[in-house]
Image 1 (cartoon, rainbow, N blue to C red):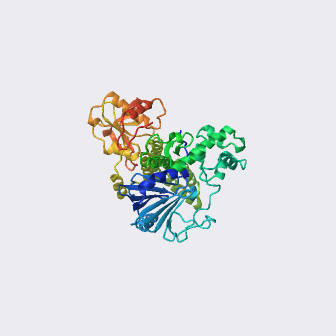
Image 2: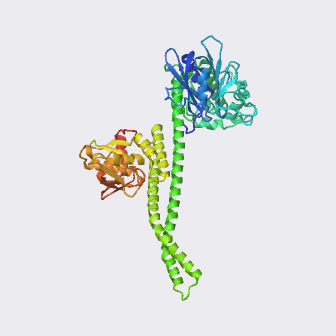
Image 3: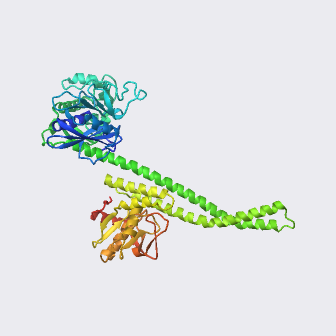
Length: 576
């Protein structure tokens, strides 16, 4: 069971990564630098046999260095990527070192192997202090991922043009395989600290994940780390010493291998009993760590994007409701126009009204006429607000029922919903350039097969709804939607064959499943031929009206079996 929090790359996993990279990457020719995002670099190297890509990140939560699959071209124009391209262009990577017990890696570059080093790329992968530096022949900083000002660090401010200085020395002493048990135990029991703090203060290179692995990587081990060193039993000390020795032997003999943990996410070193069981594949640890980080960071990106889109939709919905309430209040005031006219009539019916009373009566008549005229302006505004509120409520439904298994599909779904938000924020219909831009991006609705093999299309946002219901619909196609409930449009392609009762029921079940009423056991679903659908002039995409229709009773639970049994296509994926 892997924990939800991301496990950062520590010294042990960094050495495991370098043990795989060293024989494959040194020597190699530097070819490409690109910046994938604000805290990630991707570097391309050419060896005699292949082209390898490295990913370097100084993200505080996940600093890392590892080999990755060839990435798409992106971020060539960033300042840092251009500086690396200019500074390392034409040079060869001739050294890859990680001295001491700090998470610092130095990549040395020269014109060719054996020549004097001309450039260094220094990677400091130390949590919130992580950074990347490009150094010249005198080891002065040519470029940096982030400048460290005096107000940010009094101990080590460093920026472009400064002479590079290494990070401050670590606390504790370097672990030593030859250290006897008695001295090791005495070192850990100098102060009455919890075991985790004792390990980290006494020795270098001990991360929380490594400490948990040394304690057994079990719930009991987690409790042991919080226990004071003064209360450990002799059996606990011996078990901890045995794993300590196994870890140091693995580090010295480069006995590395990736395996999933129990309480920690993964481990990259092997105990003696695990060594030599099978021949490791090239870059197996790098690939496993890359997949782990891609999954964790992708999930985090989806969660953040989901929160942003939801917040934006809720703000828009609140604004629309507030504006509609204001228009309803204005409409309610129209009812007072008769009372105003009666007041004016009473003033003019006086035996001898004064000039001021006549003026007041005229003002009351004018105000009453203005209120009556406002009905013609308020009524369409109310209808527009109602339509937008319906679309926003449907967007919130699409948001909560979006794809979950694929980060790429989830992000694409969130992007489309965000575009819907932008369209809803605009007043009136989009201009010609916006329509042209929207038309060039073909929607990819979820597609499934009905029991008899007919295509079933499910819109997952407003643009997809309009695409399947109005633009792609043909004579004979049938449209399904949950009655009086926000949800997806479902189209059964009756134009490709004669649908049976099972096909109609499956489409109705899907419409119920992809609606806000999916938690109910029975949902009323409207069935309408697509020929009877009409686009509402001036309304947003996917807003339709229809004549007549038939009501079917659907079971959202049955749709889950259809989604599992039928592989989706065109960007869709099965629901859990």
